[in-house]
Image (cartoon, rainbow, N blue to C red; front, side, top):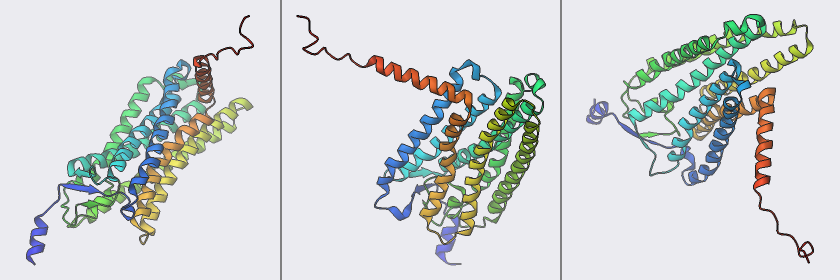
Length: 334
């Protein structure tokens, strides 16, 4: 073994440079404005729907509370990703310590897993509401809801902890440059100088197992829900139930299709540039956060009505605050 190899095997970087979109070295600064605008748009849209649910007492029901929780997770996920991305476009503020990198990795994957777990809780809530409506108030209580959210938190931690724990034991000696805008698992693992087959196996196994399990549970739940909805005698109640399920299914499709398409392209299109892979990562992380409040705000009747009232009040308030125009010389008294 050469002297360089011996020294490199003992070397392990403890801080890294985040180089988001490395192929755009000269023009990365121009990416700040579009991503900052996207960030502000996502936070504003999610916060607006959350404010509507919190402010309106009639929306203090399990379904709307879960929607508000899902959108709060969207804000947290976007805040975990976009600000570090904006800093990675600069050469002054793009250095990150290994500890901070692992914390960011944990937060990103925890919020993704928690997002999917909330969708499972929402499916259970709709199952009870449509398949057993008479007992819904006594079954889905605040205590049960808090317990299910607690289980979702524990499940998400259990999914993410092994991946981050194994990553913390790896030696990183190849380079101190992460060619990504965030501490994404495989982007960090590319810098390792040892055997990471266990990391890859554990990460892929957990991802596939949980995705398949989620899809099976969601598929069974919503097939039963749709079957029960079509058996409702009242046309209005049936339409409302199907419309609510349609909103949830659109959100589920957005979340899982974006995640799965990113994973598939990452493994198939290996010849694509790093910038393409980074763009796909931004796509699957940010697209659901942007689309979810639009889906729930536009398709959920109760939320849409309250949003309309909120906009009307804001419009009237702006009109009332406009200064009165001075009378013209024709209107002046003689």
